[in-house]
Length: 228
View 1 (cartoon, rainbow, N blue to C red):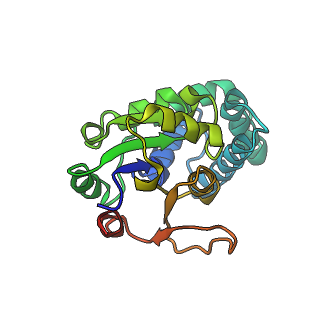
View 2 (view 1 turned 120 degrees about the vertical axis):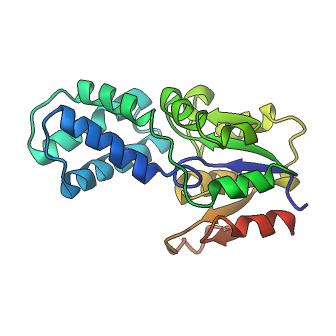
C-alpha cells in the first residue's frame, strides 16, 4: 500500500453537495414564496460560492457568511425577506440532505479494508454532522474534522496541523489528501507537505504552478493510486 491514511474532503468529493444544496434551497424558496427557478438557484449558488471563497481568505466570518449569502441573493432578485430567517431555515433543510456521489460508497468500502479514512471539511458542524453521520459512509471513517470545530478553514496550514496532531501515528509520507477544490483541499494539502489527489470530474484546467500529485476524473481511479 502506497498510502495508509486518506484525508477525504466531503462536499463535491464524496457527498453530492450540488443536489443537496438544490433541494435545500427549493425548500426555502417554497417557504418564503420565492419562485423556484433555475435562475434563482444559479444566483444563490454564485452568492454562496463567493462567500466561501472570502471565508477561506479570512475576509468574512462564518457567522457573516451564513447571512451575507442570503442578503446578496435577495438583493440580486429584488425580493424582500429576512436573510436571518432564510439562513436558519436553509441550514435546517441542508442538514437533512445526505446524498452521495456515484462511486463514493464503493471506493470508501474498499479503501477502508486497508486504510484509515478521515473527513476533512469546511463547514458548519450542525450541517456537516447531520449529513455525514446518517450516511452509509460514516462507519467506514475513523474521524471527521470540521472547520468550525478546528477554528480555521482549509487551506490554512493550521487546519492540517490540527489533523496531524489528532490522527494516531500520522505519517506524512503515507498520507493522501483527496478533494475537488483547488483553493482549499489541494492548495491546503500542498502547503502541509502532503501528496494530493484532485478529483476533477469536469476536467478543468489547473494553474501550471500548482504541484498536484495526482488528478482523477472518476472516484474509482483513486483505488489504484492508493494501492500502487
